[in-house]
Amino acid sequence: MADELTSADVRKVARLARLAVSEADAERYRVELAAVLGYIERLREVDVSGVEPMAHVAGETNRLRADEPGPTLANEVLMGMAPASEGAFVKVPKVLGDGGGA
Image (cartoon, rainbow, N blue to C red):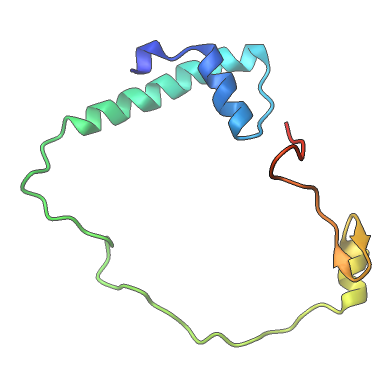
């Protein structure tokens, strides 16, 4: 699988992740991604039939603390930090559909 990876595959993954990748970088990333996929294939060969599944590597699970509100910024300060606003709301670029991206 890792040997079959093409630069076109890398560009497609980059596009799906909304990342801009140059032609020169696509080949370098193809080699790196192929190495990662090759390592994953090696891990699949490990016999784990006698190993019990675990959700946590430490003995503690779901360590939760109280949800208590802390200090907040004044609305005027927040709006002054925002690159764009619309009324009392911070305006952000659309990220779904045809909202642009890389």
